[in-house]
Structure formats: C-alpha cells, structure tokens
Length: 121
Image: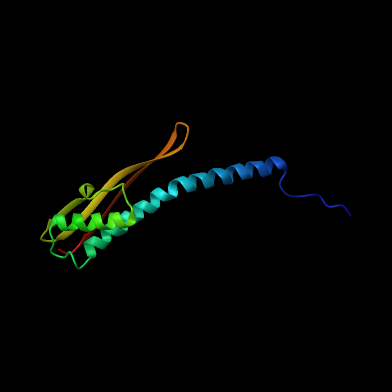
C-alpha cells in the first residue's frame, strides 16, 4: 500500500531556511546592544546600593561608575552621561542613550535605552 509523502518541498525548505537565517542575523546584531544595556543597568544598581559610597558625593558615584565601566568595557554611557539627583530622600541615578545598529544597506535599528536606580543616601 502506497502512502502519500509528507514533508517540506525544496521551495518550502528554502523559505524556512531564509526566515531562520534572517532571525539569526537579527539576533547576532542586536543582542550585544541589549546585553550592554543590562550591564549598564546592573552597574548603576550596584553603585547606588553599594555600601562603600553611602553618603558620598556625586563625584564619588561618577568615579565608581567609571571604574565599573572600565572593567566591563562599556563605552555607550560615560560617567558624565549619568543624571544623579541627591536629596534628603536618597539618591537617584538615571541614564538614557540611543544605540544604532546597522543591519544591511540603508537599514538600521535604533534602540532607545533608559534606566534608573534609587537608593538610600
């Protein structure tokens, strides 16, 4: 008894391979930007909640971020880019930046990142 064949045709396989390829290229080009954002956010949270800087000046927070930036090789946000608000309620460190990722030809993806951390003064 003959059974009807099932599966992908050559055209179907090429279509699926093209879609998977596009998704992989998108991921390989955009994931580093997202990882860098989460690294910056982690470092901002660490300096705000770090006991060593508690009660320090705005310059102390910028210096701590600069040291962490050097260790993690971050260049998108510099210590001067941090918005630091210190008052009697505590401290808030925030940042925002854009990251343009070139895809191919005239196509680019623009990421608009922002983040903040608050902690006791």
